[in-house]
Every structure is written in C-alpha cells, then in structure tokens.
Length: 60
Image 1: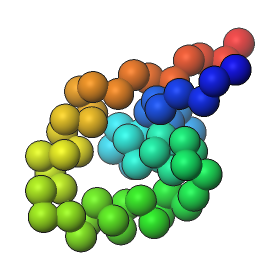
Image 2 (image 1 turned 30 degrees about the horizontal axis):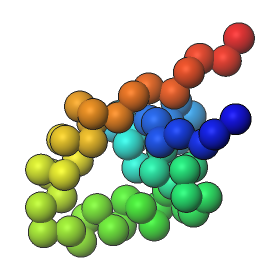
Image 3 (image 1 turned 90 degrees about the horizontal axis):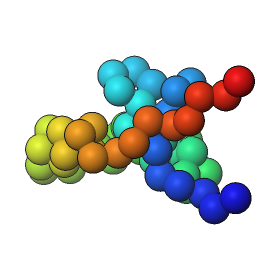
C-alpha cells in the first residue's frame, strides 16, 4: 500500500496535521510542531493544511 499524507487520528493536539506529517516522514511530531512555530506564515499554512488534508481511514 502506498503511504499517503493524511491527518493523524492518534497523534493530534488540534486537528492532527502535524501528527500526520510526522507519521508520513517517520519523524517526531514534536519536531514538526516546532518547525511550524518557527515558520513566518505558520497560521496561514496550517489553515490550508487543515482544510486540504484528508482524515486517515478508520480501522475496524
């Protein structure tokens, strides 16, 4: 199965965007959150990702 960028269902503080990015690249979600804090347009980029990233599929 091909790895797809989706919001995380398990590692989320607000909507799962940073957790999903961390799962996709196999890195720590804390590192992704710190990068978002340092970006100049962090709120704008985060809002775009919240609205465009799909939710991860539910496990049965």
